[in-house]
Image (cartoon, rainbow, N blue to C red; front, side, top):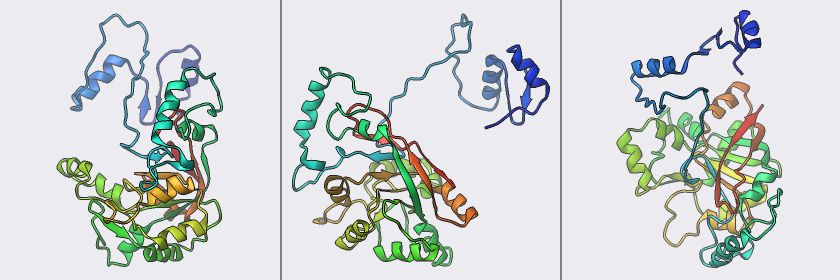
Length: 303
């Protein structure tokens, strides 16, 4: 929270006088702010008609929940060979549940919504002990500071690397932990050119992620993680080799384990290094969207 430092601010605030200064932030007239932003080279459009009497605005947001830091819900990715989602729900049954949805009474707990809808996750959130494995940083340190791979290309992070990183960080897992893995993809994205970002958005060259395989699944199962997430677009290597089952099929459709993707773990990594600990209280509150397939992360860590 940024609090004003001028002692006169309190007296002015009591009379609702928009005057005062506090560090880098201060109140200013709307037109003055627009002018300053234009001078700074920003393309700001003034859509007012000149008759507004109050400084009031509204937002209308249209997003694809798969386009940023997000959770994959249980109706996002099913078991491909069984042709069903978690708990055996079929795509047809889920779609038909929307047709019946308007006839149902409103349930504030989200239990009357379509099966597997993200609204159920919004009731209690995804909260618990978080554990961050900085695999990217560990591999850099063990490769003389050179990038061990290009995160914007298909690359499999092996179970051996994950386990070695955990040992190097002194991490001891507990049942119900929320596992976060830093692969370097977000850092790579931040330093890419506009052309590279457009190319990466097609996914044609794939991207880094956890290796698909029975050994990885056994390790994840044995540690009983409540949820898993990473900073790359799919958590697992993409694309999966031909004939190799996706981790999504087992995690989402078989186990009911949420998968987080494209989490921005850069600041969290810095905090972990500062505190010299890789565990923290993790909290995330998915969107309360009726029948939602996925949700923005809305996540945070507390040390």
